[in-house]
Image (cartoon, rainbow, N blue to C red; front, side, top):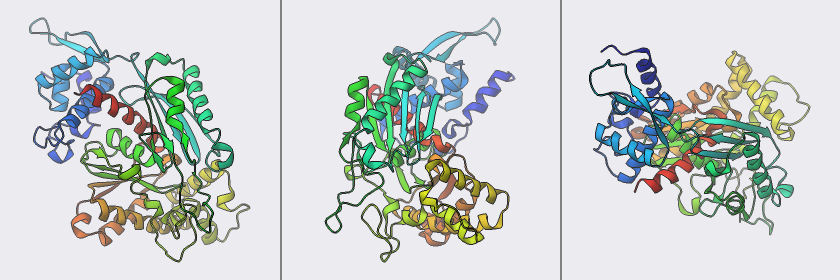
Length: 454
């Protein structure tokens, strides 16, 4: 039978999920999804339920037979998964497929229960604060964002951080008329270090000359998870923004279907999140891959973290602003680090746009910055041997990273161990400045599906 227009749309939508593509290689499948690698059966069930739920969401109305065709999962597996989702009231049976005429068994359509649950995701960025209401399939339904000197105003914020976050969530619930009883969970992304299990913000413990360094994100002993959970009575998840970004890319972005990846976060700060065998790698005390605070010059300046010559001192995108001024011979009225968050972000984006328009100075400045970032990328490649490094500009949004990516890719090919360099892919994020919001959705869903997959 010739596919109709609806079938074509459904297949095109499913093509956005690499492991749902007909003929996908085993390398593109989550561990165990093909029934051959089953190193973690529970993880397989989590991924499969999330995959089926997402396909139902993307196609609005779809039959079990079509889901089986798109995913490659057996009809029996699809029946088991959809029955579980129906039992949880996450999906609905919404009618019958009559396209096959009067003969034969009619396929029952499935659709997402859009009213059942919502997720609130919050991002406490270095320059941008975001809040979003999301659905179970990873769609951002409503979003608010604004620039706020949340991190730089450290003395003011420590005592009021819990209060501000609670107020932000209340504003989202009221503004978008969200039934608090429909909340499945709340996620909060923030610069580290922090204790993810306890949801407690930490700071650098290193003392220099008897004084604690003034780290720009030193929110010491702020019990954020406890405060938000007490206020709203739902599960709350607080994690490092790099970890959450890695989850976002793994579930919804460039890393879908990739078992081993690193998200290299560049921009106002520098960090990395790591996925190993399909699972987020946290390390001891939830502190892992602080690539921005690897020393690249042991005679370098003191970093706010207390270390010296850290990569982040050289890779911070503020240096792009200063580099352009220096190379072009212009003298800015205000040094980059004295600009407001909004002004700095706007200027950085302008330089990237100029480079895309073939401005020679802008292109050279970005190439030089890419060479600086490649120090971190080569270190990540040699340390974790990932299949993919995803470069994300995080809250700076959808800027054209092609010049940086080219420099990083060349450096990895030339300087990483050959067995790594020959296979690793360097790609840009597809989630833009919303990467931590998508990661927050994944953080809540991962816990939810873990609990129902038993």
